[in-house]
Length: 467
Image 1 (cartoon, rainbow, N blue to C red):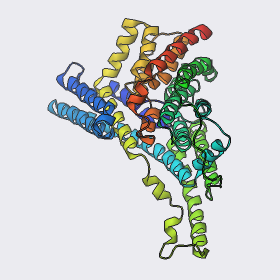
Image 2 (tube, rainbow, N blue to C red):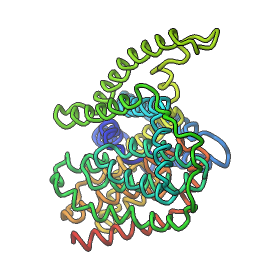
Image 3 (cartoon, one colour):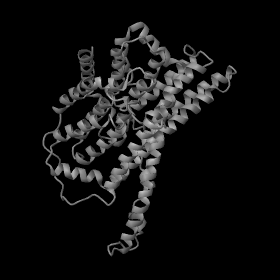
């Protein structure tokens, strides 16, 4: 639901563009209309059910799918009653098309991760880390630091998914370690994405708008680092001591093709970045091209494995060799569908509220009535509840008269504010699905005060260093 989809960035521009479309084509004033209030009530109710997922055992995608449908049906009915045709249909098509870009981007990333899991890549990494004798505390810092420094290059969502897979493989014997490590990964990935134009969709939007030059974003490195370190140091005290259980065997578990798939995944990310940076093509096209890399390699890998099974005397009687060989479609099927449909519900529901005009109203109220510093700090808090993409776009659309210091501040807060809640960033939402039962909304909420302390400290450091 929110943040930090660096390269899914282009995909998520959907929501921001829909806000623009709403402002320029909305024919009805529904902000103070009963339909508008009802839309807000539907959205809030859906989010409350998402927050209660682990208590009521209702998958988070279900209430948001329903909320999105009800909001747009409500708007369509009101527009039909007023004889206005075409506006709602156009807005829905625009939102849905942009969601499709996000969907396929994430689907490719999840497919690669599932393929690497099946090839034993993360199990091999787990064995290597255990063989090095790293304890839970060192593993906590290794995965968090990697998340912080990888996310400025790759998107924070993909970074978080990879690091979470490592944590689940390495520390699966300690639920407390997995929970704290996942929180640390979410905070680190979001913080790392805040000081790079490619680290988060919000930073990309600010850069493309021409508000800040490329090199100025790196002034946020120290504030972002503080944002990561403060809660990490506090969580360090709660980490279990000792180290994961030693593996029964140190035998190589990496299956054929595992390292090649890792290389193909890096090539896919590079393709997505290059398509966007040099050809101005949405990153999803680069990701889908990268899926072709995996499919073609999978074709040869599958034939090779089937040949080996047929030649091997160890093939169990009656077993089909195809059941033991590489299958790309099996990895696609194992994607986190609940998370993907949850993103659909959030993007369409938030797009509906933007179509009504609430996002523009919120931005105007903040900057006119409260002033830029207070408003920019609140933007980060708001982005922990509502996707930061439409919030940031509303700010860019209003284009308040602010110095560079304040534009850097809102870039920072919108980037790291989503760490305050697990549902506040795409990384957090995805990890709730990947580490189901270990990393939950409530487990993250317990550490929100520590994360908020890091949030405040990063703002103070920003004014200290850049002010």
